[in-house]
Length: 640
Image (tube, rainbow, N blue to C red):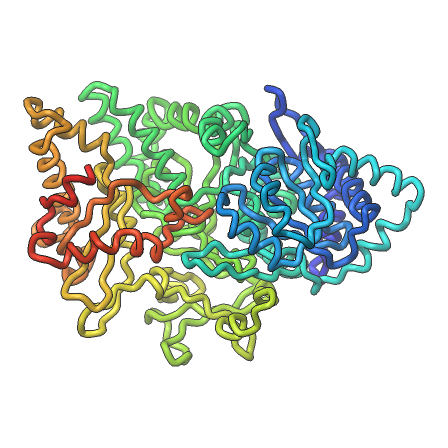
């Protein structure tokens, strides 16, 4: 593939020339999986592009994309690019009217492409989005209003336009330059102030080609996309990476709601039998829980063997890329036997039997979780990125997979670690991760002051993430967390809590989520979302005479949670993993989990710390009292 600066459409056209008859898109409609080749994708996308031009879309016009992941999402984006338009992708998970209105108006969008499942969120807002000229609905089986049109009508218009003006569409897409904007991606971030990340055609192509050089898979492979397509991670590491290899991309049937989509995931995995999947920690954790739950029903002897087999395989596989070795040759016959008896069956039951690896992003993965799947024979390649870098900055891969790290910096990037004054730090020292490359965004839309805060005059992007370069290979980076989430003690010392939080959740079956807090206070507190079913089962097993809903049982549950949180203290099983001074001295039990519905998770499953802290301010203040420091208190009891 040509490495000169090109647009996304140039890139796609090259892929079609090379892989015309390969299947690109897989989608389930009316109970049947359909397949769309690269050539067919090109034809349909061109019709949409021509249709957009025919209804008045000008080069540079902004078009909102508001839909769950499906073929028409991808076809519509390509159609926008053929028409020279800019995509403004909005997560289908958004429910707040003010958020939608802000993004539509702030982006200066003139058109909306929306699925019928999201249309009900747009219709009540029409009086407040006056710049919208036309709403294009992806589905045709619902009644439409005067300013709405089905996408089938748009493609019919495109067909007529292409027959009358066969060269006009090519003239439009040929007028686009690599430096033209492709998308305005609004950050959901962990604050309430979304910023529109301006990403150019060149940003996307450069990041995709560099990611492709690092992550290898075959043109016959299928990637299953579960993550929202509006996010850069699914865009580049999914849609465009797959395209660059001539491989196939499958989406999960949405049904009528996000919940139905979640219920469709297991069946989709069994039917598609993917080779590669993009995952975030929350998704991988759910996979692990499901597998472990299926193993709990086994006999004591079987559970002993399963534990032994996982430990044995993890010892052999290490970080996967360095598995085995001459001194471990004797282990191979046993591994073969374990695989036949256990792991092959698990891979088949959980993932369809063809999974090669997971590509992980959005947040850090617990190392124990990576070892769990590595022992099964499915490595997890942790990466790191942010929307402002389109988004991939680094990734592990089959050639080098350093568990716990975020892998090697892409070949399109430079990296340095800086102190608070912006001076470069030596390899191994902790500071802010600062990166530079052609995949760094053009800036924030209509927000030059915010742009100046993160991109300096030399083009370095200051990520706001804390980390260091690995002394064993300075090209490998470790990410320790966001500076904004730092614990700050009374004496001003700082510490990132994210690894403690992830490890706590990963190691304890009784803790669903954990968030730590210390802002110049006498001690750290932990906000804990309990795994209520696991705690109920614990009480039933160990205290069968107690009513699981009674106060005595709840006290036992709180004591169990305290014991789990204390696992890192001196004399306990995980002693030495973290500095003692940062371990929580008080615990707040929360009555509900962190979800997108209550605003405490963003669309990439990251906790919005500010919202959590604001919602539970009273509980947190109570935790700094004598009564509140004891986990057995009235507030915690009422949360169970």
